[in-house]
Image 1 (cartoon, one colour):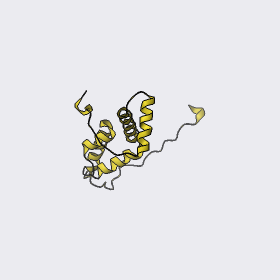
Image 2 (cartoon, one colour; image 1 turned 180 degrees about the vertical axis):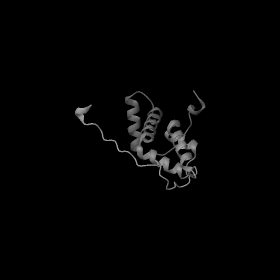
Image 3 (tube, rainbow, N blue to C red; image 1 turned 135 degrees about the vertical axis):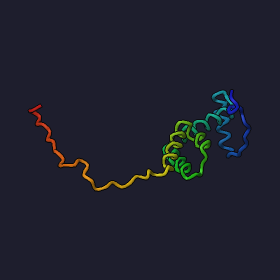
Image 4 (cartoon, one colour; image 1 turned 45 degrees about the vertical axis):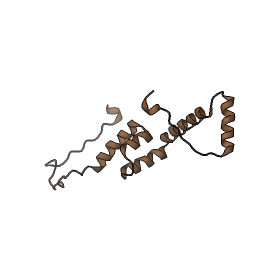
Length: 122
């Protein structure tokens, strides 16, 4: 078990009817309330992280410097976060300072058009 997997006590309030239903489900599956809550939270986070809407929101906030890279990794995973990091770096790069093309003739003469062969000539 890694340090990030160590249990952490949290406290929150919930409507009583939800706790009663949760306890009934836990009893039915012969488990406890905590295991069910942890599994429900895990599923919610995975489903949310896979959502295109959520990923777009994370990307937008990251590009606008409202989220740090480490937070992005936690929210959408390391691989996707790395892609966002590379794209952000690319977007932040200064454009290449290229001179405008001059009006010289690239071919130094007339271009030759090539007609494709008819189907029966192949």
